[in-house]
Amino acid sequence: MDNQTIPIVKSTAPLLQEYSEAIGKRFYQLLFGSHPELYHLFNQTNQRRGIQQKALAHSVYAAGEHLDNLDAIRPIITRIAHKHRAIGVVPEQYPIVGEKLIQAVQDVLGSQTNKEILDAWKKAYHYIADIFIGLERDLYEQAESQPGGWRGFRDFVVDRKVKESEVITSFYLKPADGKAIAPYLPGQYLTLRAKIPGEKYDHIRHYSLSDVPGKDYYRITVKREDAHNGYPPGMVSNYLHHQVNEGDMLSFSAPAGDFVLDLENRDPLILISGGVGLTPLLSMLKTTAERQPERQVTFIHAAINGDVHAMKDEVSRLADQNPNIQSYVCYERPTEKDRQARNFDKEGFIDRSWLESIISKPDGTFYLCGPIPFMRVIYRALIEMGIPKNRIHFEAFSPISVLDEKPVKVVG
Ligand SMILES: Cc1cc2nc3c(=O)[nH]c(=O)nc-3n(C[C@H](O)[C@H](O)[C@H](O)COP(=O)(O)OP(=O)(O)OC[C@H]3O[C@@H](n4cnc5c(N)ncnc54)[C@H](O)[C@@H]3O)c2cc1C
Ligand code: HEM
Image (cartoon, rainbow, N blue to C red; front, side):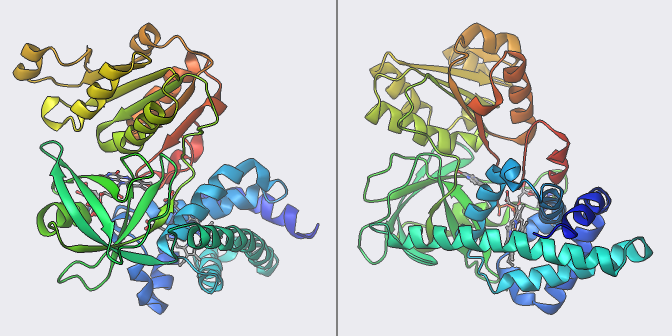
């Protein structure tokens, strides 16, 4: 990147960031206006909720701000590259996105910008795009060349559909071609391309792998998103729950994601999940129990009550069998049945004092997954407890960059 471009981009990044929502909106109008086929790729609910508008534009400007030190935002770049690979973003799409993004900046900022600024941003965009393209090329190659791997989407048969709670159901998936399937790391996800009858476009969604790697099937575990506050029911989760049955076919890209358990690490492991966020952490728990039975694990799960608490038997079986696994349950509003069964350890919300009473492991490695407000509270509590940031890993089931600083603006 040349010395003239960097100062222009860095000094104008805050201005672009300030208008990132408006620029994002304009960008998608332009993008879908000229390339309606891209509706197949983008999550239309995120579009309606305005989440993705902010995420893409915001990250481009964040990258602009760090143009001379992209290593500072390397984890975010890697996470996005995994998503892009999982969805099927290809190099030819980068110039299209770049052109519409610069056009959107020009349309929104008008006289607040000029040719020099726009040219500098064009260069910066191409520089950043080349980094993504390189990373994604490597990820495509890895996904395809590994044993049992594949490129793009592959058909799987729903071998079994198992109800896990009132709102959560697991799907056991076997490859339609009967060949081997790729290994994965606990914490990774599969990406589904759903072709829903009556829908004009595909709907792409990610689902964490919830079982142990090394089986002849993949398992995903899906929460049914019901209609609420006047919003329609979740498109894909309801399709899976109501329309997909055993024997039906679904298409997935190969396992992806960098929120993974490090099996070389022997530090105490603390897994904290809320609601359906337990899926990647359950895979981590089960894999640790199988491959590192001597490792200390604390598994903390929060749910509204016992009726919607999925896979509790699977977790308690592991905890009963292995004295190194401690399992804790927090119910926000326990039912009468829960009270009688005394099947929870805390009522209400997880807070710092409760965490302090059950975790005395500043040398531990923490993994969080759940709704964003839930993870923010826990993240803050852990930081206050003196846990170093680099020991806390998290996965969001929606577009997000960080938990602690202002950039969480990307979340709607
Ligand atoms: C890495 C990753 C892993 C994931 N793993 C899992 C997993 O293991 N299990 C799982 O269940 N999910 C998981 N998810 C979430 C999953 O990908 C889907 O987002 C989820 O199933 C909801 O999809 P949907 O199509 O059913 O809902 P959508 O149609 O996408 O709707 C999402 C929510 O928005 C609401 N909504 C709809 N329209 C609007 C509107 N206009 N304004 C505001 N709100 C609106 C809906 O009521 C619903 O609550 C994961 C996500 C990621 C990114
Ligand atoms: C330098 C350029 C780009 C940047 C900085 C960027 C950034 C992002 C970010 C931040 C996300 C959200 C990640 C998350 O879910 O956590 C995202 C998702 C996505 N990106 Fe990109 N992106 C770029 C280029 C592209 C291109 C060229 C395409 C192809 C058309 C594309 C398609 C998508 C899609 C489909 C998603 C998922 C969005 C959704 O479904 O809600 N991106 N990108």
